[in-house]
Length: 295
Image (tube, rainbow, N blue to C red; front, side):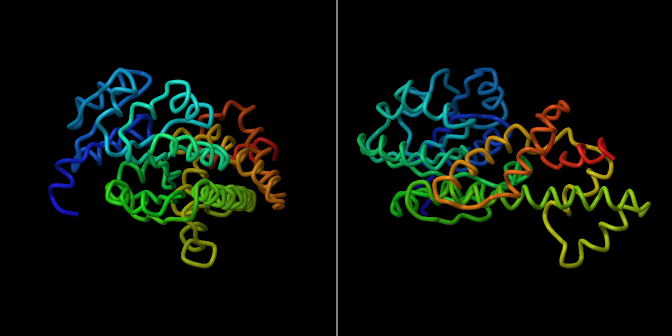
């Protein structure tokens, strides 16, 4: 892309949570950025830290944007901002919406159909990599939607992504994210059981991790969560509440496409137990707490 593209392109970013705040920050280093957050003080804080303009309503934030990134909570939040607040009607024809919210695939298909009526493109583009990935500009982004719109949006997503892949039509990005969450749920349950077993066997857990992480058992979860699990530290990372939301979408989708997800359904119930322990905001590696409690 030539320099003029970055100088003349405006990106609106809606949703400045633990992911959106740094993602919008990366964008501000290359593009003109407008930000909106339902809590205005968060947008004002972002404006103090980065170069860009904070808005107190989303309609004004998107009015002059070429791209609109969305990173909010769940289906209901996307419906509220896209339909109830009618922000699509305030966008210029040809605007590309890059929705990084993890939602259901049905919601992505619904939004793609809605925005098409206004001549606006919609990409469902959930991300993986957590808060650290957002802060380091190293997210993995899986995208569904129109191929041409995807190609236009790649320079925007590149500012905070290390890997970007177009997965197919609307909804394909969300279905890929479901695959990601299914894998993570099973891995974390296995890791939780393994770490508890090591403790019960009176092994040095840190030494166990050091040696097995160099073999076939190695995973990102082991490398980044194994030691904190042994230490009983969970006050960080991707929250159990959000994981249950994501697994709910995956389990619903499995009913529609007739997939069998017995382990995922079981782990989802284990996360429900963690919530009853007061761990709704704990990191997803907190699955181990229910094993320690029951030993």
